[in-house]
Length: 464
Length: 79
Image (cartoon, rainbow over all chains, first blue to last red; front, side, top):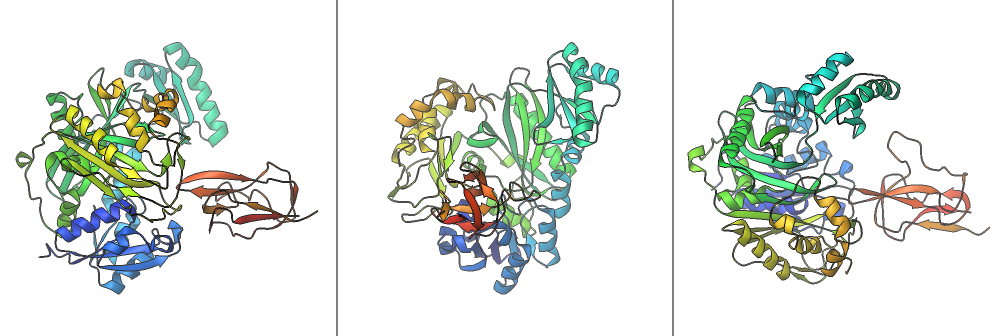
């Protein structure tokens, strides 16, 4: 039986998340429409869905990002709701508005919420208002250099001096003490004036060895519950490669505060759907700081599903259909430990060069505590036009040690011939003492890669 | 001088400009030296520069800006 008012769901995405959404819809008794570009005609999601509609050429701008084409496909097939997945239009407020204006259900928060949380400064202000700690820094621009020096000393060195008009890492300086600050701050201001025509600077504390911890929330527009945290400190070029739940470094007290702060923020904005609030966690001081909120389902949602026994994608569809939260916070418990690794079509022994090849022999891991969310089949030609994520290998164990053993076992069962994948990286990481002890932070992986290339090669990296 | 074809080593999307708001790397009629960047190919969200592998004058771009290319497909013709 279909739940709520949604009877037919159009999936405005591709790859492994499209497969995941089709499963959630079918498990909920809802029919599915899969859209696809010319490059994805042979995609697994297209074969799985009840109906499939071609929406244009390979380039995302002319297909998966084409709002008119997506709405037309929904009208042509009689779909009454659209799930955006992640990436593409998932956090595009204009798309959410357009879907609703067309009389359809957008599976996610309102365009207004997406717009609010997508604006970094507004989201930070909203977090502060809800009592959520943000990275200490100036409230806005600092004009007076003496006042700036005083504030820098108050928040504690090192501090980042950022050009308000900069971006993407441009116009950032780090001062380690008052003397350096006195020298760098005026420099930063005059350089910002020259480079951007705006001398405005602001300052922010540097969290040197931060861990990335995020909280999964689910709201129905009035109530919000959390499903605990995930830790995603293993990153390369700011991209997550390995995620876990729970984070083993949080005390129960900090965990409670962290999760309560996420619920407070989501409640303050009347959040509807699945969302994630991201934090930096300083495991020396025990402080956590809000970074941003993602107003969509995330790639790493399965680790939460594994420890909480919830289908987050089905829940977001149910809520979009107008239903209320099924569980109260007291009904939500976690058990054991889950780890996810991202299987990308990249060669970890060759600077992670993407490699869109054809899948040859394929053996997928299974058995107790193993889940493999993917889009692969033998003979599948991975298109070069989209991101390199092929799938996610997720394992569950009664504790972290068991989960690590199970990950090793699952990686040994996995065989993807025909193209390089990141699997050898994970086999190599399992031999790291730091990783086994969870003594990691967001800048731990990159130097480790520099010194462990031979180990990655020994695990099969570079061989196709 | 004989015709020479610069081929894309990888499949992906071909771009003639370094960024959408910038001028093309090279135009028809322009002379390029071996090693000069003549375009970009985006594969799985990463960008690879395509360099001329010979000296010559550009006489054609058989692939339009932001069109898909296959590995081994000619993207620039030199004379």
